Image (cartoon, rainbow, N blue to C red; front, top):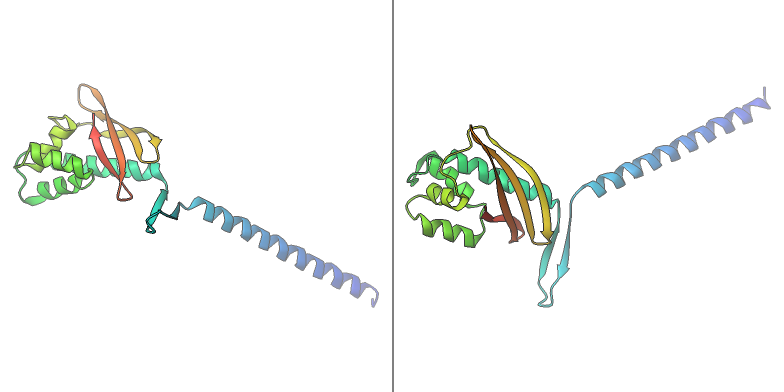
Amino acid sequence: MNKALPIILAILISAAVFGGVGYWLGTQKAEKAASTATATVTTTAKTSGTATADVTADWKSDAENTVTVFTENLLASAPYAPTSDGVNGTKANIALGKLTAAAQATVEKNSPNSISGGLALFCGIQDTPDKGTTITSSMKSDDNTVTVLSKWTYSGEVVTKTFTLILENNQWKISQVK
């Protein structure tokens, strides 16, 4: 029995060591996968010495979220009438906030008494898509431009809207809707 004891101890210690190493390697792989899955935002220095965020985050979901929030609030602000107060005005202002500064100026210039009316003109719509909207695709043209296609379904027809987004102040903002 005395000769068997060291062999049994050696087997138990080996199992513990190999099990511990296996566990450690498994946690390292999981941590690496988790850190790889998170979006990365790196900081680069410009020649002026100021730091700026290089947005390498998930451009697709960020751009699509901008279009979704814009569309939901645009449609919720209907009818496209004066919206100085109330829920319609709040929704129209949220939608307006998803536009670039230049697009916002255009909306406000074209319809100074109705933000929701200006947004409808900006999007080229008169009626809301009563059967809903769906984002169908997104593509990145360059580091600062994304195009999102959205299907707008009306009772009698389907219309594809093309949203052009640009990176403005490190956020995807809608510059054009066709």
